[in-house]
Length: 435
Ligand SMILES: Cc1ncc(COP(=O)(O)O)c(C=O)c1O
Image (cartoon, rainbow, N blue to C red; front, side, top):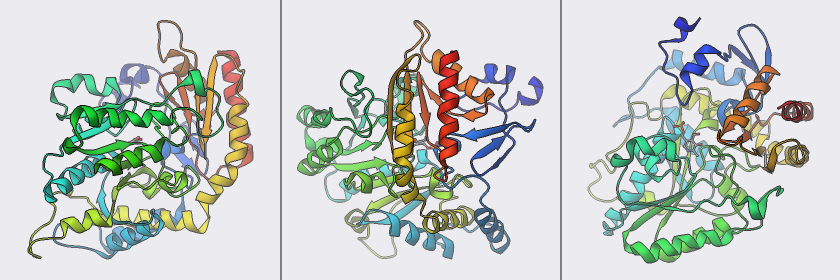
């Protein structure tokens, strides 16, 4: 067995441990996976925050197959094809007002690096070339490109490459504060003032050197860190005051997870750029996108009409197959009202999440929309071990969860039914009791 698995260098995986005790998934449908032996696994994380309409959606596989028959590939540079324009229009339709142009990429990481490049180029085009500084946030995850790990705030993703991270990046403090906000239902009460950190960085570096701030409205990868009430509004106001662009990285919050199409709409804060991926194609075909506000796009549409306005793009930007999958996914989201469904299930979800309060080792439960974080007390001297054990035991008992540090993150497909919610939390409760 081990030798069969050897050649694949698995991403963000403890390769040796995995290959000694593999956890394989072979089939998926609706809310479930099946292992090669046929064991059913309830999907508590929508794959990896991406299969928002559930697995095995025939509309998507048929659209992809059709597209491959009609036209498998078309070059995206100086050429176009109908599904690319159609998907851009469909995305703009559900995006926050004014974010009305779309640049297609292949992943969340590429979306982030693209957004950062657009932000830098925009300032330069407007004659503010000194604005080169990018501001991220501690515990932020923005993928694994050099831009993304530079603005990201996860030390393990940065330290190997510390000397080659992009220069001139600074970070806001993260907003996670269990001393004031533990066991909050919905958005935390305390911490809006942490947005004022940006004023401190402006005072330190001067606004004339700062291009953009990038944050996840809800930080997912470091364990579901919700924005304190008023925090994002305050960040927006400070950006406006100083001419700084605000980028929301909505790679996990996009496509309904909070109960709205985008978290920007859910929280009522309008960023200048949005990065998205994952749910864009229901996880079926790799694809990401950057949504930009009109004034940003317009600034690029200057100069001779024959000139290329942005020297950036990918061979697979707006890949026809990905566009077909995206169009089919967006049409399922709309037809089945899945974003509203996430909202309507949120209260039941919240009650179930907070039902784990008091379970052994649980030091926080938190939730928003169809997202939850369950934070566990670390085993002394072995950070992450407790939650990894829970993740393994859950898998043995037929439930897929996500472990990050000592936090269990949950983000099920938006088609989830009450019986699935009951199964997720009863499994977690019994695993925690046995831990
Ligand atoms: C907020 C955020 N940004 C970017 C990414 C990177 O996306 P990808 O893995 O598709 O490159 C992720 C992935 O989880 C993410 O959660």
